[in-house]
Length: 166
Length: 94
Image (cartoon, chains in turn blue, yellow):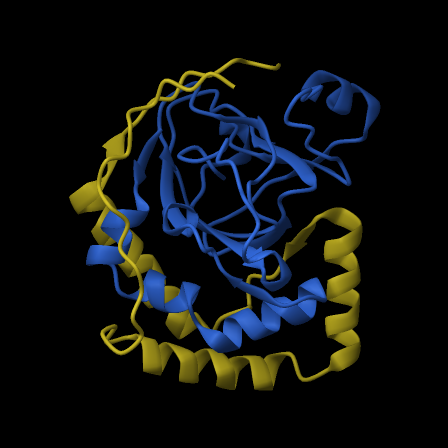
């Protein structure tokens, strides 16, 4: 998987950082979340561009380090190529004992296909999710943005999913 | 998890809205679009419930097409200049 890091987006991008920090967008997201949200205090995990392109490129089962994510689908392959979003909501990340297989076995999995132009919000810290592997060479490009709860602005966060978020 | 990805050594870049040429216009467009598109508080309530219930909410019209278009252009430009393949090998669960 290829990506463009936060540092390069922040330094050379214009629209992505502007949208990410947009007060009206954050206010509206807060209405959907029913709590105030803020830009991530940790700059590295504010946004990233990911491009899956080779057979087997995937983004395995994980939770987000931060509670709210917005994913922008820039390009999506046909669903027959893989690259589908799978979600298990209302699951909780015990960092000492992940039990991914148990979560997958004991809960229904929602699978969703997307097309270019789609945007979705994910309650990423309590929704176990993955992007299924590409089963053939194809291109899937997304932008992932992540926000923090205002009430948690000073919490200590470990960054297990840093650099491979989706 | 055992991560083997390269260390990210470059310092992060913060954000200053006064230095971002797009910021003011983007905010105006988004505000006007939200006021126009999501004026029904009942709809917002059900969208919030859906996010709570499913952990997921598809909301492709959260920004106007004009913002989406320049956003996509920004992505394409950055990909062409800075994309780097960073294969990350971690423990596989499935």
